Image (cartoon, rainbow, N blue to C red; front, top):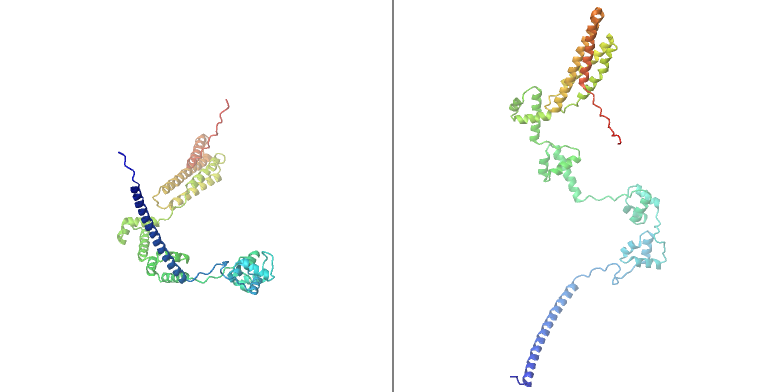
Length: 400
């Protein structure tokens, strides 16, 4: 069933809704008002804080700062060689303002023209060792202009001496203390501990002075023990006896003697092998010239080389190294071959003596024996140093 139309009810509902809306608008306006009042109070407090602080100086070129430039003073500074930027910095204005004042005073100069200062005076003061900063007040120019004149003359401007800082003075004092304690014989570790620095600092200072750190008592004792062990070893005392006398272990003795052992001499095995092989033409020449003089020369050459090889073997130290054992074996082999060849030469000499006194029937046997002696001696020398085989030439395949 349809609801009857009620105009009065609709009016009541509309009135209620309008009342509710008006209450919300009042609450919102009240909140905005309170926020505005709080913000105004904070701004007033900020203004009071800023007003209590001193105002910062206005930068160069700030319109709020009075730009007053004394024309006479600006002209005088300009004539002394100062640039517009330097004059502006002195007066606290912009370089443009300085240019305007100078132009109004009738001062004009081409842009970039150098100040009128004496180049000779600048160079004379430079030769006296003065820096550009020290020369500038004396010649009435800026330090930049003075440095420019010195550089144009092909010279290097001197730098102004700097006053020593507290750090430099402390470093100099520390260096003197380190050198003093080092002169008293203290080791680097104890010096570092006394001065409350690192040992690296002590080593660096001593190294810069060309000094070596003093040994510690333990190191000095170990050095004395090492020298004593080496002396006993040179006297022929065994390693176990050295360890017992010094109160150390046998491995320690072995380590000390290993350090004392001199470096092995350079190898000469190849030299002796080549020299022995080089005597082969002299031995083969006996087939053509079997004179007494030629035989004697051959024997002397073989004897001298064999004695030199023996002396080299005697000088070789007792190294338990493979290269020394190989050196000893190779030189000994060459010496043995030379001695055997020398025996053949003595036999060859006897055959030649017998051939001079023998009958005709015995000559073939003696000649054969002498021939075999020289051949055997030559073969012994060949075995000392066999020639290096030459590589076979490359065979280029023929085109098919």
